[in-house]
Image 1 (cartoon, rainbow, N blue to C red):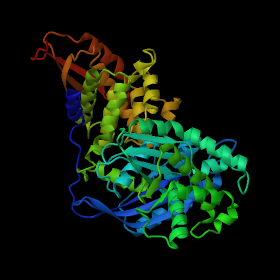
Image 2 (cartoon, helix red, strand yellow):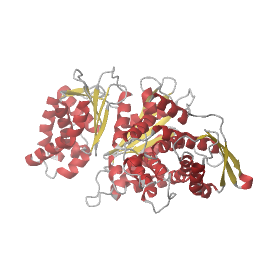
Image 3 (tube, rainbow, N blue to C red):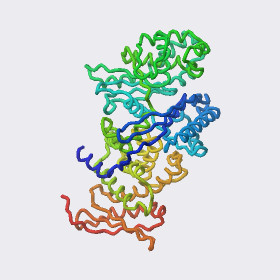
Image 4 (cartoon, helix red, strand yellow):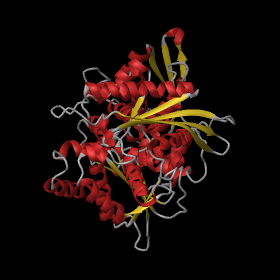
Length: 552
């Protein structure tokens, strides 16, 4: 694997680092199932660190979906649109130079979720990244790490959202486990609670359901703990902070500000749950520190925490006020090369995630790395001539090149379609849902038909920018695949020589073995060049040059 890692580094090239010493003002928005949260931060690149200068939260209940269709309702989308417009206004008033937005469970699962994101982009000019459950967990981990020192000791992080609960195990280095389970305070309230106050039967049924849903994630997490380790439990999210607030008022008569570091026990939590279950929703709303909307879902959320703590065998929990939105900021800092200390391992999470998926599906890495080198060489040499894509798209092309043949794990027949499915459902970390969709489409179109609007996979690309990128870069990937048709490294090097005045694009091919006519590679190139010529309006002309280096 050392050789593979070196080849990967070479194929990727150097990751550009912003060399700046002035503060950067950024806004991060978390479009959740229950609420839309935003933080505005000032990033100090020289530290590196960030300071939160503003927060905003609006309860929009995107999770109150249509019971028959599962769609986001018009009312919920209207509330969300208004909240997002408000977030934009606040960010603009604070001179934020960039707004980074992510959407989670409710949008992820709703059949019309992507349509909603397109509507946001059209009306507000705001691009929202849809992220998977494991990717949500990874960014929560980053957010917690930015606000709490782990001292290289194992910590379990639990984040209870409106639609899902994330469980993470880590010690300040790479997370050992990341899980996302479809139990959330809004989801469970809507699907399982019909009585007010909750009946004994419904309470017991809900308790059993939560336990059953969480068992698998808890088992996986515990399997990654060593026998001598005693982890600490860290809680994030509005539900857990509300429970901490209730506890503080009951025991201390006041709520500490900030809540960061506040703790309570499982026994304390059970007392709170027993109290909440006996109250109506209106009575819960009268509790100090409890909002009307939170009172509707707090019982389900509290029960999730109680069952999680019981299954994990944890007697106490400590609060961390940083979570997903702060993790979005940390991820941005990692991507732009600001963080190189205890989080440096995270900056290569994309590359390592791709290689992990490749190994899972038994991809021939030596072959895939050659295809990646050819694809990136074509990308680099044609930049500014055939396309204007940047480093982000370059990395998506690299990932697609490494994984383009993973569909062979299922079957040789239509393996390009199988590759799409495996990549799409492979839980690639570090990528947004849109980026995963783009990688999967690039791999899907490395052979056979070029992208067409009638293809469902292509229609899943909701962004015109990403469709255009797939159109162009899949054409380059096809050429790269053709150049190693025998999978023996017959072509050593490629040199692009555009001849726009003649309407041609010359491709000089240096062979690895003198005397090799590369007939199969040239045949494959002739077969696959159609989409390239159609996309760029140039005739592809290969020129074979015998190499001087012989590989035994």
